[in-house]
Length: 129
Image (cartoon, rainbow, N blue to C red; front, side):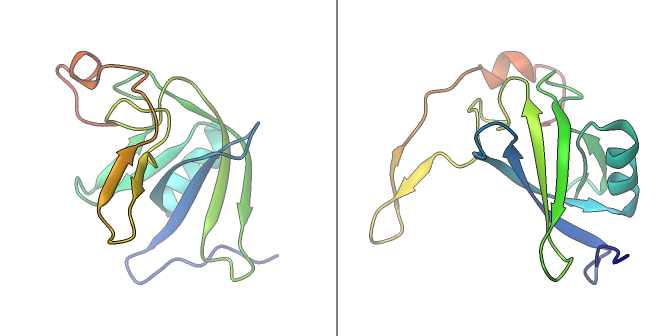
């Protein structure tokens, strides 16, 4: 059986999708520890490159991701994790991180969603999740 292929930093990119409608919610990275923890707990766990540590999605916001299925691409170097999303996936307050429509010059033309939570209230004393 093939194993996932880690990049030079020991990470693998992860596209997170809603298990019901395949909406792309976010993109993150996992290291081997986050991958194993996700497999064991069925709760999405990632590796934060900026904070240099593991983080469980929803640990500070309560907006969790229950893992339904994990897929790998044909090269085994990228994952899709299909989840049941509770609340918003985006730390800015949106359901998905992909909310900015760009114009033909590459500038943000509009925001395509309304916020579903206020990040200032959710992250009063916590880091982003």
